[in-house]
Length: 173
Length: 173
DNA sequence: CAAGATTGACTCTTCAATCTTG
DNA sequence: CAAGATTGAAGAGTCAATCTTG
Image (cartoon, rainbow over all chains, first blue to last red; front, side, top):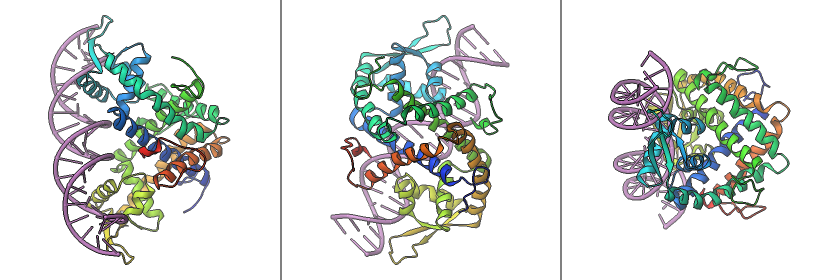
């Protein structure tokens, strides 16, 4: 395969290594996290993320806010909360604010407990598989780069115009 | 939330930024790629990846090799090839080698054409959303770090013992 | 009509069971 | 019995349509 640099149809050697490494690393880390959560704690990775966010917000959070913070659609959040409610981990309540359209997901004791049990291993897996391999020295730089990538895409998702270039493809977001 | 460094239950500030950035960036980039492929080229991201791999191997590849290279199970590859075959993009043939158990997926002209049409934009999206944000200067380092993460996990998946530490959680792979 | 939220249909993924060949 | 590959059912995600409230 040809190995043009930067402007060609195909990715160059460095570009390809970065992309396939990024893609495969993400898939396999997610696979490990997902299996750990479902095997040892009976919840999906998304269940866990939802519980973390609600806990981080003090125990209650609006559906729409949840959908915005986690990278997920409103429909997905609704069905995830539905499953968590059936298992007694969260509860749906009318929004505390006056808006009659809002629904808040409220963390129940059982959900708080499940979260606490899962979180210790969860963090350790991420350290072992990601942080340790990236290396202490490069970790801050890596974190900043990933935040730039994510923040750029989040800005587009909110409909904000892109600051420094055209970004022709984000219409797919 | 507490902000211990390295050894606690929770991720530290740097660790958390690296992890959430990595996770969200991966999700949103995949979302853009997936939508581009399905909207403009009528194929899923995994369809595209399968076609790329077969093409890279010279136009034919065994199912089991495909499953190993792409991070996917044998069942998933089987069903993906099934769909591609129905659309006339690949064809299943008995393995060229003597082993009567082997099946090879062979790229057909229509598949080659679909791949060519999709690949130009595909590479450009990845450059715009990932490489450009990481930055030219940091890209090689980033690529090496991601390759270390992925290679470490691939080694575990193949059952090889881990070189420099215990890695207690890879049993979930 | 726009925003928050939900539902149902369809698709994709995973898991366990199956079949065939070495 | 182990390895390569396939199948069917169940679980989760996406999309379009719907309902309610501002």
